[in-house]
Image 1 (cartoon, rainbow, N blue to C red):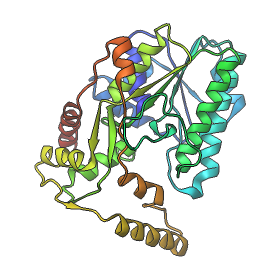
Image 2: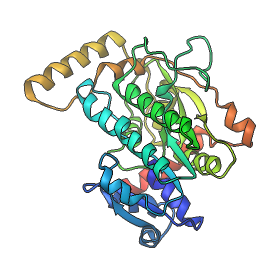
Image 3: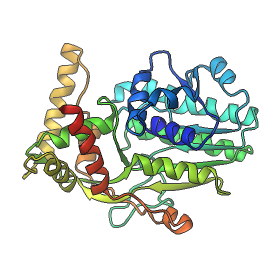
Image 4: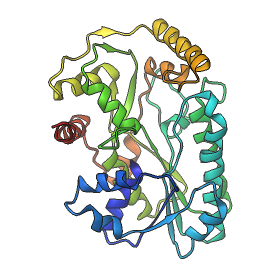
Length: 326
């Protein structure tokens, strides 16, 4: 999702762009994102140079870097199932190492790395900021572990002469393919589910993420991270806002963490017996009942950056979703 919205913004600002995609990528999903902005998405799509290259495929990636001066690295595998650790490490850590090594080899001017707030530590009695460092002793998800490993590869690159900026978004919301995590979240929220977990998260609009990335790449800032969060919000409030936008009843009943952990155990057992895909892993359940709130002031203070409110983001998403469902 981030890559598609970023690509559109770069193209309309008259940048010469090369975009890489995997062999099995759904490029129609990219065109669908473009169609939200423009009546002629094919024109925007064809304005970019498309090249088939996987970030784990060094020969193809090396060719993709020819003639490039700046790199936006948005590619990642998002999964919280411990059984997926090997592929998470392959894509998120090794893939990022490949990007960093080629940036150094090809003398890239600057790299923008899309990380995550998952790589930051916790602060139970205050707002998490850019100086809240990773704690390896916490119960970190496999996704967080590999994204942290990816960050370390980029920091390693900065020690070897690479200029880079890091963005650590919270939960990114925006119009997206239905299979995207954001699309799934919107589907759940708009369904009018009666239950809510007790946790809370930091939310940011995908368009704000893109604006911040381009802003930082065009600035003199280097080797610095920025949390991207518009608002901290409880899951109850988030689900309630979504439900009301779709004329559904907001959730009234608090979920039991014990019950959800039990359901997660049943989900694990079912996946072993029927070889089905895990839907409710323990780390997902744990996050549903954790309040992780963030200090978003660094970007605002240094660049006078104005975030889109969560209510504005949800309203824009709901309008598009309603049109799709007609």
